[in-house]
Length: 253
Image (cartoon, rainbow, N blue to C red; front, side, top):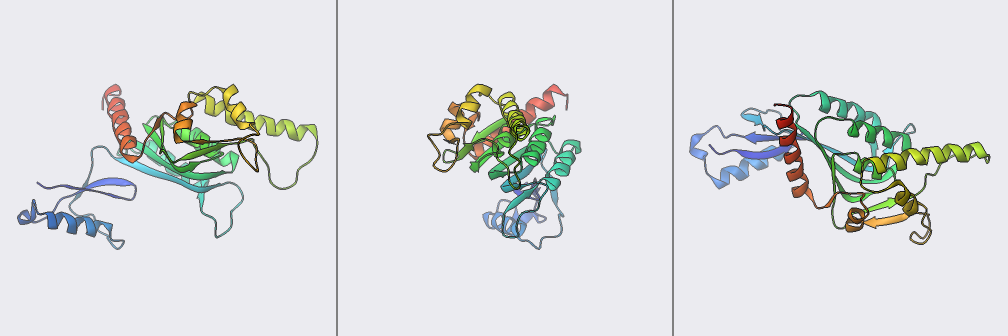
């Protein structure tokens, strides 16, 4: 029987035609794929889920924290991401999580909260950096079990900064230093880069024109030990499928 794979609502499904006369027809395959892409599709009749059900999570634009960004800004809201991650971990029908990253960074507290939650999941997770994984996007990228970056992708590593009122006392500096230490500790514990090397890249004054820090391209991020592999969606899915098989074998599922 012909089965057509498609993606909707972050999940993979098989579409099975009703008519046996249509089986094997290339035109039927095209028609069904077009039908599944229509936004007004309301019924999932004759659709069954794949045995490997992968949830897709995209983190794009700026990671929004406790203060709302402007209406014109693309943002990922952490109050939406956290409960979603909890549902993914608790849902027996979901086997793994694929995280698609293209972010300029954002709120440190919100970004670390998401990263810590991903890192604490038992289900297999894979991250893929597309475009950029800058600033707080670095801990988000390394929080998964395995990380990839496309060849043209970039990652900017820079010191912590603050907005709004700044009180020029030693306590303020120590507080920012502790916040930065939380980030470097998390990244070094979830990747192959050492904390010392990460701080060297973070405090480099020779790379960026208007900032302190370093911009790494895809192969450089792998060479430094931040990311595991250079690759795109196909190797990311292949790795996630392998992790899911291993997870099921170890847990007798």
